[in-house]
Image (cartoon, rainbow, N blue to C red; front, side, top):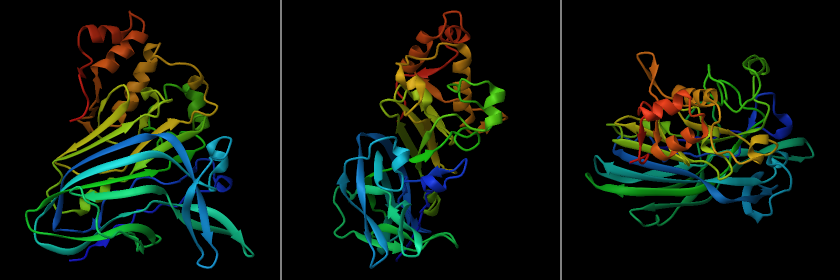
Length: 379
């Protein structure tokens, strides 16, 4: 049986064409997704999204004859803020590693499997003016099936899963499974980041909350509509897991690690199921369920953002912690009108408490073990 590939392509904005609240998309994660495959079930997924040790840039090669663009060799990253060179090179900043445990519920033969490639618009031109060419937003892709690479991986263009969506490039291969067979699929690749000229309520952080590190008054922040600094957003597409055979995965666990120059307090999730926060990472978890929304974590870009010029040990005022805790709580689903607060690791709880005044509410909460903690986040 052959399954269609679900396409998850997104178009980017050029820096010059961006409106007030537009971002520039330069590649985000996609998930393993044969479309409407009722013979294969994902039993478990463990996803780690980690910052690359070194940001790398790759040239874009254009074939005028074929009117296509592709990612070429690595090149020195352009000088200056990254946003100034958007649309000129692929700048990879993140690494995704997804481990799937997949079970065949029936015999399947030559099923097409694959990863749609997130794409972004490379702006070029010809005698007729501006031309936007869609370019793959990933680099260094590899996949293993029970420890072995597929015999042949194709790069092909596949139709969109949405009626009006554009065609998308994809890495594909075929595989056959006997009923009852359980295999481990591992995918890894480097990808880019979504830039925005401000972090916006309702888009980059939950409606009804405030960014604790935005030092403007609440009235001023609401009037302006966005934070006064550039933002970056790491995204990962999770909902295609719904297209696999039921029942839902027993566990889906996602860990997003903060870049080394960004304290965990500045990582703002606008996604449900945040379950735990430790000193370096946000942890999301679904049990016997499939994600109902895509993953998105925003944070202020380092360039020109004053607090990053100093070492930040933790919160120094009670209201800062309260505002941050509200951000985390609002990212969760609610039950009976109350947010399910994520747990803190004990090390992070102690670190937060050390920075706050001894007579703060939080210090008392720690002393009375009201703010619960775990020794280790994750499974």
